[in-house]
Length: 225
Image (cartoon, rainbow, N blue to C red; front, side, top):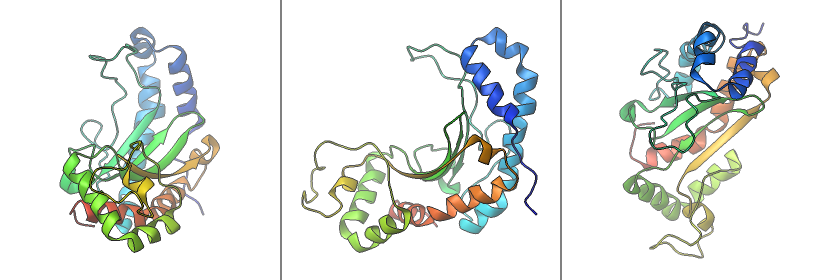
């Protein structure tokens, strides 16, 4: 029998209202709702996700601490932003590699809840130049292995350069991937799926489906898989 849902429609109701009222007085007046309907369900999900995540790879963390753990803060850093809205209008978690636990640019799985735009995925987001070169070299010198990843995972996303990076063959069969500055694959869910019983299992299956990409990227940057 599917497990009881971690999330309820109240989570999405809160986020929709926050988008319309992205101000500190409103948030402070509704903070108890945020804790009960958003933060606590996400932290329970993270804690329960640790077991299926460890079966995919034991080197990634599902840390349910409310501060400094896998869950991203709801507060935006507006110091250098033109948009001074104080709060994010989505909720998210990042399951980072244990050897790069403080680095958001290291390999990791990412879980995102936004009304009408929910997904779980994994990859490397804007890695530092040395790590990016290692990934590009792995693709360039192992096109057979990368081709297997692409056939298994399907679409790989990520912003790319307009021209081939220097030092790589413009005629390489995966030149479009060599142009990328990020590498990410994801599985989308409806709001109803997120709030349904057994979603934890569906989320784990989504992560398993992108396991080949995560393994390739993690090993490319010389981390344990």
